[in-house]
Length: 477
Image (cartoon, rainbow, N blue to C red; front, side, top):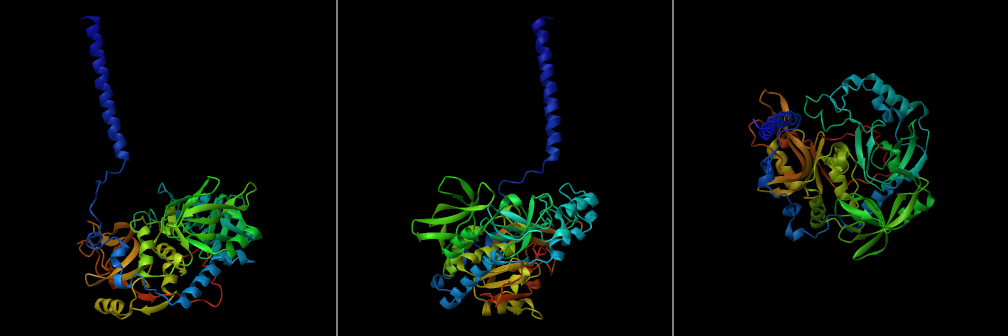
């Protein structure tokens, strides 16, 4: 056989061997990857097809511009929101008690699991305990500000802690250490610093928790005065880059944020920012932001104005406790009402008790529906069940419609075990999302059947500043 022919055979054999290796290796890789989802998967519940997923679909055209609060009440609510917003800067001692701040140090670490599903264990808890330095609490006490979007954590770590991943609502994404997200430019009170200096215990007007020290900058009297004395601008669009006048990107503007407004807000709005200076302290910077992105605070609460802001959030992903800079149900409603000067607490139960609460105890499904449609004010009525909060936006097809950020509906799997049909985003549904599913758990899987009551806004204005709930805010699944 000629040498050239032999060489061809050898090359062909090498190619065939390489193909076999590639196929086998590709199959091995495929085994590590999740199955591909269809490009356009079927909606998890029929409501997402039957009901418009635009907030404007639930605005009464004849009442779109009608104020939902009397001017005097709107002014009172807006002033109260600002008072609470800046209240961390005026604290002289922590609002959160030590037993709340360090509550998770008493958790059994063998019943908490990391991202690899292994128990975190006692060495992990020992490291957390040493770094938290509870015996020295409070070892600090100064006003500060969040200079970037961050999280309030139950322990000084960004690593997650899950419960039993085999049970619905206990594995991913339900990180038990996540108290809440916190937007950039939120006023803080720092009460404690971890032993390694990498974490601070920060209190906001709505919750408290550990934050990375690099996300925080102490503020002086000049910065505080600038923020508190100027009128404010509120973001009415979401996920908008904020670049200062020196050309530096600072953060994404998010609905629920407020910034000091310098001068008039016409085509462009001049705002102040607090940024981390060379010495680690907050210094003032400026930015120009389009008047389509921010608006003067407070905006008049109307159906149309609320729908405009709500449409910025519809379709966004669910974020347990603000994980990944997403929102859960109570964060969505808290942020939605900020531009209108209406302050809601951070967790679902507290929101349900913020206004005038009407219990549904003793009422059947039909009576609950009738009560909602008779007494509920669209866009100003909250509906509550344990662990979840929703906004009543009116009736559609003869049934109440609700705007909410939901994880999923309760179903049984093929083996009769409780599971979830995941929705995982901000949507408009009826009070029975998933009712068409044969696997839906009944009657508890029907939202209407488990509603605890409804809450008429506006919130009651407390005569004294509200105390921060500590690190154990009731987050929602």
